[in-house]
Image (tube, rainbow, N blue to C red; front, top):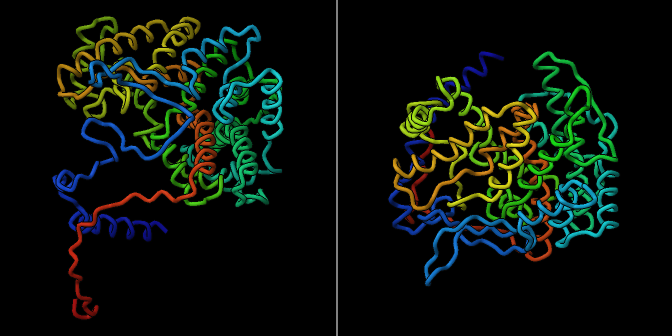
Length: 457
């Protein structure tokens, strides 16, 4: 077996050079043909590919006939994310936000008390896995990549659904609600299986409690003693709400709409979205922030020294520190320039959690980097728009304070974002009956090559 693998690896290494020789395209041709690389123009704006009523992102406003950067805004179904967060946090009912905002995104309106109760009950009654599913699927072939584990589980769940291929709206909504409700179990149980079989720790499974919110159940299922503080649960709930949806143009949501347009079933669509989200350029960014900050602390003699922190950040940009990629992770966003509203909201609650966890020193360092990095980047790079901290800058720090292992950082993003994916899947099915098929300019000559017999090559 080892010899077979080595042969395949050696062959792949040799043939990679052939791939490079025959597949590399001159970057100047993208400009000459007017092709927008990554479906973005030179200023980073995405190509308009569809319409949506689900969310709105604003990073610019018109002043005297010109578009100028402004503080970022994020609206869910027309409601400003700041107002929504203030609403459920200050509500007299003291309820958590995940279920309420999920209802809003899925159905387009805020629920009444009775509608929210019925929705919560529907999610609760959907939060079960088939008999022996944990043993036969999740515990088999466990691995460190929990996103792969979730994707495998989602595709396998299709085998247990007699209406898996039915794309009628009621059935798709049922499937989406079921997946929203079981995602926390798929993620946490997948991690526990890995932690037991690969890391040698104890293996325990806690069933979700029907009386608890999604955030509470996440912490309850993850921790051996099932205990958590109210602040911990509410900060995690806030993180889920902030990651729930972000326009139709992000990579995984676009993947959802593309796969939906092909007529695929819900399980295949969500598996495709998961595969997109797991990429380090998309859902895995907060892990890089945590790793970068750990490297920074290791190389700083004084965390409070602005000059020393500035020197380290400059070395990052010069590819002389951390992973030598030339990036300050958590800074900048494809859309936002002056500010990411999600990061702004998050910061207040991060500070409260840092105080409870006695990690004020860490929070002070994060705050200093947030202040210094944009100035350093502006001084070192020619940038077409402003740079500010994005939501990933603080989310990894939050998860670490909640004792959530890094293997679950991106899965928690998925637990939140599946709500947005589900809303976009429904919107695509309702409004568009046409497969998404973008065009690619071929560089091949019209004159065909002549086939030569194998013995003469």
